[in-house]
Image 1 (cartoon, one colour):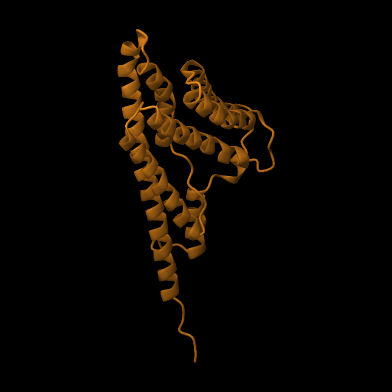
Image 2 (image 1 turned 180 degrees about the horizontal axis):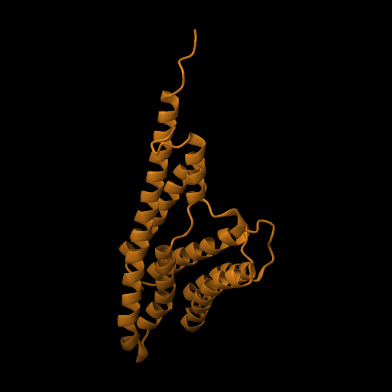
Length: 227
């Protein structure tokens, strides 16, 4: 029995449903779908973006790639729902592309002195903490939590802040106009990114604690073995 007065198997089923996506919303065997192709194109743009930013410093082309990344980040999820093309691969590619863009952009920005290193340290520290929480979650037999709305909103803000930051450090007349907007997107994106990370860690801790409590309660109800 669990603390809710329900059989142990029932509580485990509910907990598993809370952690994993419903089975009917994921098509495991679909690979070459339009959303997946968009995510792959977004991933392919990462090394090109880094080269443009750090090599010839072609900021205009780098901004264009970042803008494309932001648009495809919105489009792949939208199309997956509209066309019923959700897939297990897509669920992995989308957040992977987002994290890779954020990581590559922040490192390049530090090298170009676009943002201070402490901003990068905070954001990357959040990702490390979430990654460790994911390992703990899987160690206890659960799959990764679904990306929440706050996390998506944070990624949206950051992906739109990055090209604006590039414009803000330029020498053109538009730099002064864009700078406040760029800093606002960066601040909101950074704060939401941290809050979503803290919320993720809190959810993981709650799931793990509930699982440990149920295990203890189940073991305590077993009849003593005969020696």
